[in-house]
Image (cartoon, rainbow, N blue to C red; front, top):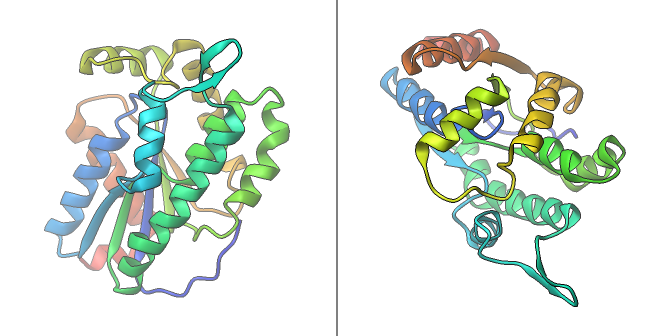
Length: 224
């Protein structure tokens, strides 16, 4: 999963289980870096593009597969293909142009999510990881991936607190498996720079830990 670096920008991915705070802290990190003088671009996966919109409908249980036994959810392999397609479109339309322009791109989720979620939902589990890596082999590597670690029960409480219908991947048993997978996330993206940050505590405390971890991993950002 390597891609030759050919841009002056900085690419940061923020990851973790549903309810870890990746959306909140992607936004706060982008805001903080911008306040320090960096040109920043905040983005997310799934994207708001055409493929990302399709994925969101599936995650929100608004689209199903129709077969002889009635409607059912999409297969893990179909999801892996959709996420990879959305990612390549994301890179082509937004991420790479911004990086070539010298911007700092902060993405709420990236290909680590595919490796974690699709391997956790596949019957073959760990055996499918090489295929998922191959699907994402053209994905430019982040300069650093921040994994926000929280216990499954804390993440579940936060998900309940925000309300809404439970999405496709948000049931407790799966999220418990995902907590264990994210705890060893560096094994899924060998060669990548990855840091773990505790997601427990007040948002400003977590935000400060994330900023320090990012600045340590990418020293060039300290000049801002």
